[in-house]
Length: 264
Image 1: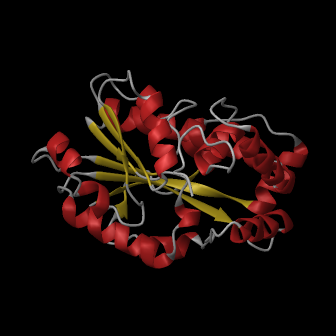
Image 2: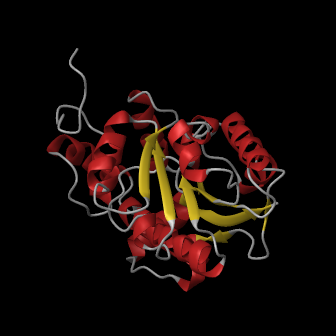
């Protein structure tokens, strides 16, 4: 079997599907066909994804301009397009992206080729030690353990044991003033569109996990929320997005999610 590359348009790619649903152009026809299947099941999803990306931009500004972090390490990054972290951070910030998919990583590196202080490495978000122990990352960081981590929009791909492992590894590795920005998807698996979407992903070999917020709070310990607490995307810094009445009904019925700054 030939090695997959960024120009392989024969198979859908998760990063390119996400890019298409966000309104981007780094995708192929095979990605668009799959994305339209997802959109048919969950018509509100593109707007929810866009809202999530706006929140992520706000996270980038808050972490770097207000909280003073000059290094952000992002997990399960997808393609660095459509206003990703590096476009919103304070000047001079180092952004380290990662993804488990080698095609996405290769494509991401091409996109970031002329972007200073932005890096992309292959690593599994379920095992953050893979990224932290890479020789290239250790060279970038040196002895610095004062960093901000981001896990945004990836919780549905993580099993309970993955979240517990992530929490412990990052907590033990980082210094006492580091921060973990996490977005937790909370959707009703019984909602018709969501249930069909879960089954569709299962047919592609991807297990989807949704859990109540209270369960997540236990899994992520010993991290704890800062004074802002857990906030829904609709509440996140007053961000608003135009939604039709039909969108809102589906959005509320299917579920949304919560963002949080976790500290020690």
